[in-house]
Image (cartoon, rainbow, N blue to C red; front, side, top):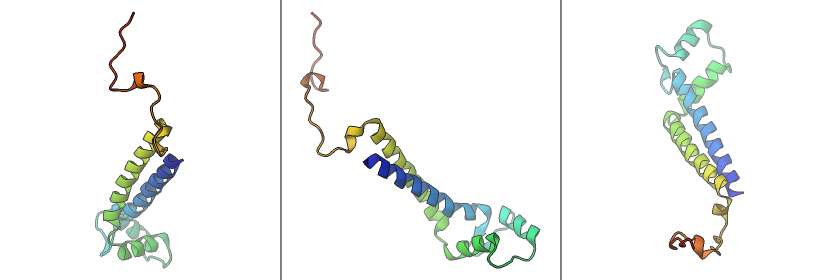
Length: 118
């Protein structure tokens, strides 16, 4: 159960981080459109940018969220770590049980010497 929550959090962080990063990769920045990027070619192709268009919305977001290019990759990495933790919990469901179940088989303990064959 805990693994599902951690996995969902990881996927959400990856999705949010990607959404924050994509506009800057396309060439939208806090100071305007970056030359020689896809956003510059897009702006040349449409000419006069209409208000409330996708292009205008991406530029408005980039102008008002200057930390997005930094925060986005951080969220993606954190999401990958969380998703990895969820994967580990999925492999061993006893990891999210608290208190941990006691080992009832001392012969299977890591510290016990192997039994000699008779």
